[in-house]
Every structure is written in structure tokens, then in C-alpha cells.
Image 1 (cartoon, helix red, strand yellow):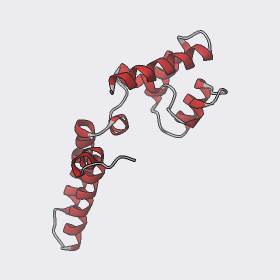
Image 2 (image 1 turned 120 degrees about the horizontal axis):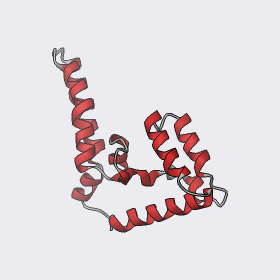
Image 3 (image 1 turned 45 degrees about the vertical axis):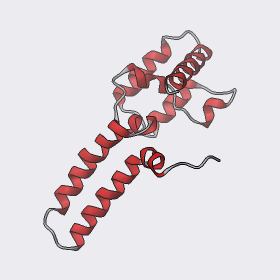
Amino acid sequence: MATSTPRERLSENITEITTLGVTGTWLAAMFLGVSWWLPFMLFGYIIIVPLVAILFGDESDIEEWIDDKFDRTDSNLPAQSANSETPNFDPLEELRHRYANGELTDDQFERKLEKLLETETLEDAAEWHQRQRERESTRNR
């Protein structure tokens, strides 16, 4: 296991560090009886944390905060889970599972379902998904 520098750890964990800073600030303000703690908490979690995640976070942070309005995130059809590595992987079932768990909005589900149904078979969809993941991994290098 390679050791990393504090700068590398900071850049890898910037979203979590920002969340910790926002939480610590509003909690301290609340316990000190300052009147601005609630607006700061809301501003921190609604504006500051998502903005830091989008601007400086890694791919998982960005996917968590940005809706899949761009084709870039359509490569997540279906979710990248342990199930995707098994031979019995069913993209439609995975899509339904993510929708049922609340991971996808109605619009996201419909867009992803349309994309899935554009392929002729479930095997074609799984191959398409694998190609998209490979493209994403080569772009991130």
C-alpha cells in the first residue's frame, strides 16, 4: 500500500472535510447561542457542500450531486454494483432495484429505461454498459 501525502488525502476527501467543517461550524454556533446557526447550516448543506463536491470531488461525489441530465452519467446504467460482475447480471432488474430504492427519480428511470430498451437484448445492454465503463476508466487515467 503506497503512502499518500496530506495534500493527496485532502484532495481525495475534500467533500467529507467540507461537510465536517460545515457541521462543526453550525454546531459550535448553536451551542454558543449565535442566531445565525440555522441559516448557516442550510446554506452549508444546500450550497457549500454540493458545490465543493461538484467542483473538487471525485467521480462518485459528482454523480451523487449532479442529476444525469448529461450523457456522461448515462454510463451508470445500471448501477455499478457487485451484481454487475456476476454472469447472471440483469440490467433491467438492476434499474428497477435502483428506482425502487429511491436512487433514481422518475425522469432518470424513464431515460435510463429508454436507453436500455434501445438495445435488442439484455446481453447487448450489459455489453454497452461495460464499454461505457471502459471509456470512463480510460478518460480518468
